[in-house]
Length: 133
Picture 1 (cartoon, rainbow, N blue to C red):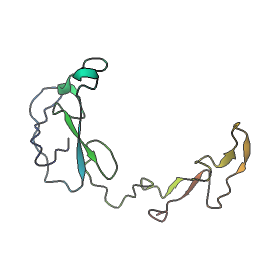
Picture 2 (cartoon, rainbow, N blue to C red):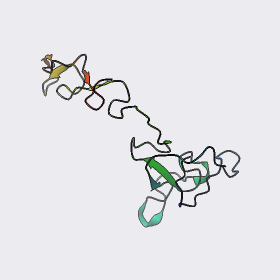
Picture 3 (tube, rainbow, N blue to C red):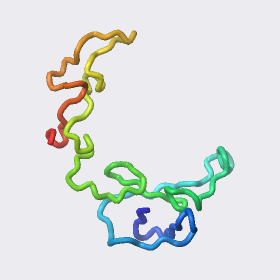
């Protein structure tokens, strides 16, 4: 679990309920601490089946989890290195002209031909974020 300094959170193992200990040094990144395992219904009651925050693998009983502001994943370590977040390092992303389909379809779902974007191959185009690398 990623625990930003200053939140005074003490996560515990969901199996043995023992306090977790820190592993490694400080992480570099940006996170947002969001509420987790809190009542969401009217009047502060649970909406749905009862939950045990001590068994939650997102907040580990702290009722707060961290959201990476680079990839919007909970408990991400924030180390994205040189990986392009726009294409997840693949160098290609879905084509906007054909919505990643490779073909155009009308409102009735009928095929109207190939994608008009000359860069589009099977609904994917080179990523502009990393230049397709």
